[in-house]
Image (cartoon, rainbow, N blue to C red):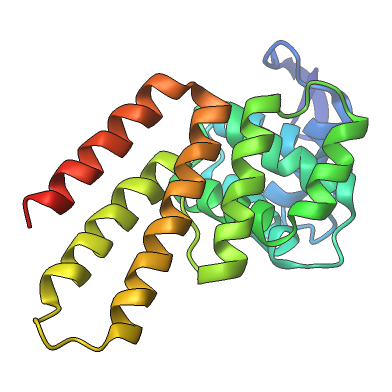
Length: 214
């Protein structure tokens, strides 16, 4: 690429391998004050802006990505692209990864439909897990990064709830606790279906043992 010097294109600048002209121009426009943004190149532009050490451009692109993720009108393919990028790329910052996860579980039907048409965009195992996390979010309002995270936290909460019940606790409350454990075991069964039964069985046995020791 030729870079202007004193009004004349005299300097040569070597761009990173893989960077398209369109993404470079999109990033350069933002770097030099433009408010226009090529959404189709946003992920590529963000990635290479980091390599080029343009933190202001990276920040603006990430803000745009977060806005896209929060917007329920974002089309399914764009949503899937951002979610898949956040899942696969080690360089994605935690706040953007969290926004992508929240968008995926909040709009899972849209993401799932796009993923079914784009083979390989999201691993089948992760699709199954995100589907379960979406149901958890719809039922309880929690957004967890993984089923494992949810199962550990939920088991601890349920055990603490049971410990807090005195001998005179109403039957309705105890019944509610038991229903919560049934739901936990259902999700544990689903975890075993996705990731293998051995770990799920260990958790089930450990949970039962902890309840017996109370």
